[in-house]
Length: 329
Image (cartoon, rainbow, N blue to C red; front, top):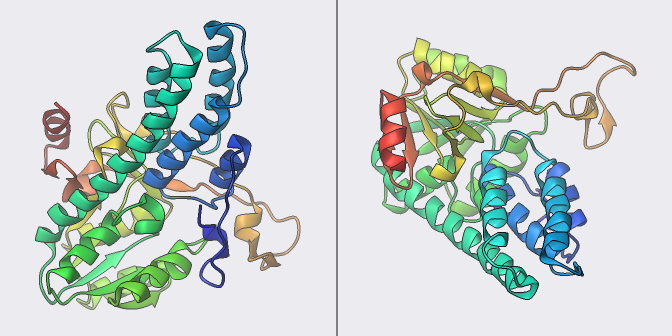
């Protein structure tokens, strides 16, 4: 796993056969982005299963459940993590032979990786049709290969459009508090050779008011059955601003990010993270000691602010509830 906390200054890889290391990497954002978290979680579960020695299949599954619980406890909002864990648990229930279960878990983790990579390619290709040649696109957080193990979601849409020869420019929100936009999205855009300008989160409305934003494309960590979408904190503000200025607001995400068991975004669990992520940058304090801090990692954008949801199975438009149900069936 490429340690995303060390970017853009250092390329440091984590190599491990210990599922606890994978869990720590997910929790500490060394690997992040909903699809990438799902892939890492699946591999972590497979790694946790391999060394288990048990006298019975029931005892094996009990210990495997502990591994799965450790992995899924790392990031409560990212749907892809639970989607992957559910698939791994289902595979483990398919046979009684412990050796066969272990082999099946490894194969399923690889399959999840392959699928998520392909999903991102399809999301990118399908979404690129919405990109207008010569347009400027505003994006928030990081949604490229780092976050997806493939082309990316929102980033992938932009990248695919550029590959088609469309001239696009990108406004990159820095994305506080962990600066995924300024640290990671700019790094990926530089490597892709796509023109961009880095702005602070609070500048989005200014550029929209000046007519310098043609569309907004973001990713997602969880999409409820009605289309309400959880994404990195600050996304809701961007969506409201886009609506006020008549700018299309697109969400790009694979269907593995959709959780139809959640009727609306009000049911999405929002992860609360450590105060130090707000009070420090790269370990350097930027606030007085002892200040009270709130640090929700995500917010929920109501479906009414979303123009369309781009998935690997097609573009979903309003009414989202019906569209999501149809595309998943």
